[in-house]
Length: 296
Image 1 (cartoon, rainbow, N blue to C red):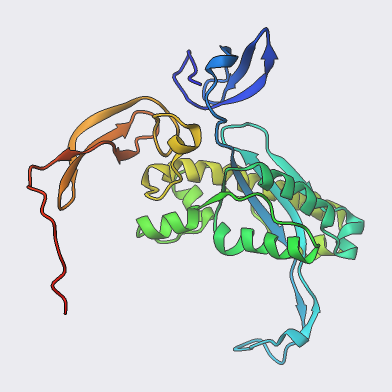
Image 2: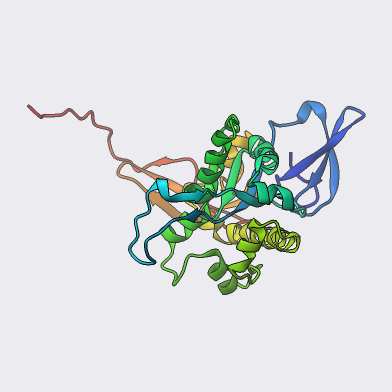
């Protein structure tokens, strides 16, 4: 599927009419249709998400250099809220515990709703997601006797920032401020304590804070995307010859080549997201030699 208006390979199915699939383009928002027989495989579903969890209550002997045994736990943590959005979609999806659920530390209902989204996703994106969000949700899923969602690929924007840049800070708050993107809302520690007690106003504020985090996350991801070297190959997911990182079909060959010990690869650059990548190969001209180990 290629948008006839802007050339993007990203779109959402809008139903079938007269043997044609209707589409809505994520890039330019225009609608068009394609014959059913010419449809490619399903487009990848890329989900950006963020969760907010409660604090833990524990017994401690002091404030510094404490190693707290699990027997000292009074109240364990639970998920207070989550927010998510499909890449390029304007709608932010959100769920938060009710005041009564917060008092009972019951996050089962909102776990069910985020599970359904993760189960649909081909790729998920979160800041510190591999270490925090995904593992935290997995623990709550298994605690609530829920089955794991369908397999997905993960992109952790914190890992990307740390591996590719020598920035003063890798926090999402710093990145959004530095690049003048959607900034995180200002909060205080008391927001979490009030939300845990079921304060309705605090829970609404937590949901709003969560939604803003996801909007900023999308902008951070798009900013860093050309630098993601291990990005899941969207061409494989889309079964099409497109940019590996963004799925766009407009690319140009540069004058650069990528050299290995035996071959050279033309370097292409996506005209949409500016990601450079290699495609195809040309033999350098060395005679291929069968090598044999001489180890005894």
